[in-house]
Length: 183
Image (cartoon, rainbow, N blue to C red; front, side, top):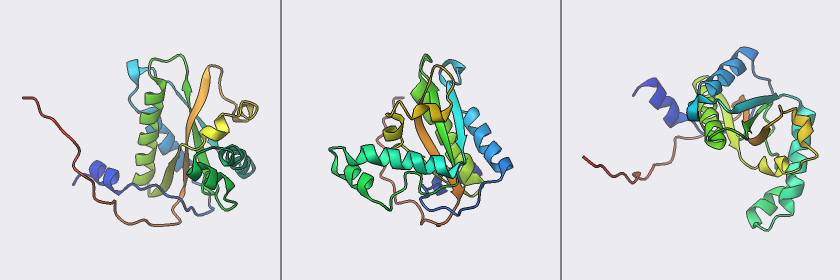
C-alpha cells in the first residue's frame, strides 16, 4: 500500500490531546496542505484562523454549548448540557476555516482544504478532529469579531489539532461503496 493510501486509511478523529502546543514547523505543514487543496475555478476561497489562546477556545466552547443546550435535538441538547464536554476536546490548537461568501463553491473548497489538513496532520502523527458543532458558536454574530475574519468571509468549520492523547483502533470495516461502471 502506498503512503498516501495508508495515511487515508489510518486517519481517525482524535478526541483526546496532550497539552503541549504543536511545533510551528508542523503547523505550517498542515496549513500549507490546506492551501494546496483543489478549489472551484482555483479561487482558493478559504481563510485559516489559527487559535492557540486557551481562554478564547474555552469561551467558544461555553458559548456554543449554551446554544446547543437550547436545541430541540436530544443528542445536541445533551452535549450542550454536559459540563465535561469541551467543543474542541481541549486541543491546544484549532484552525477555524472560513469561506469567501462570493466564491463559486466556497463550502466545497473549504471542505477539501480541511481534508488535506486532516491528512497532513495524520502524516505527522498529529491528532485532528473536524468540528462541525462550531456552527453553534458561529451563529452568534456578536462573537464573530473575536475571530478577526477578513471582510467577505464567514466561518464554516474548525479543526482541532494536537499531539495524540489516545491511539484509536483501526477503522471499522467499510461497506462496499455503490459503484456503477459505464463502459
